[in-house]
Image (cartoon, rainbow, N blue to C red):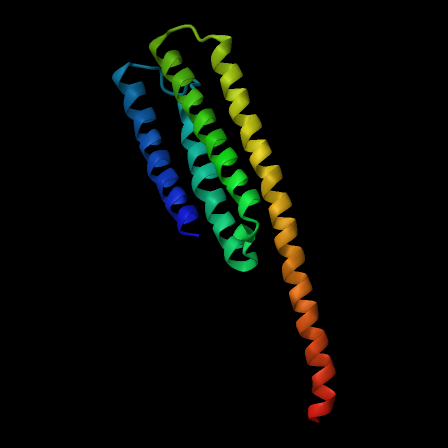
Length: 156
């Protein structure tokens, strides 16, 4: 759980810093206000996919102990984070080129696409781990309910 909390906190810091970079870099380079650049998307991707999603995963971990499936949880964590970092880095790179008036290449889009695929793969692995954890939790609750239901009439 500490790993999730730390990663979420780091994404919050980097997300806020990327918003500051976006604002200051566009001002410094006299980029027209309101004109689209992917720098703003990096800010929201880092805050939403990094900070907020990992806080939600942290809450789900607390309730369902998802990390009990250690291998699945590790695969989720590393795939997902690699995807978020790769995607955000390409958004910053592409956005910076736009602000500087430079031409972007298809390579940047391809790498960003790979980042999105890693995020997707990570989320699929996460849902497999979550399904198992919910199944374990439901099995534990139904076993507790059966024991309680059997013992309660005897106690009366």
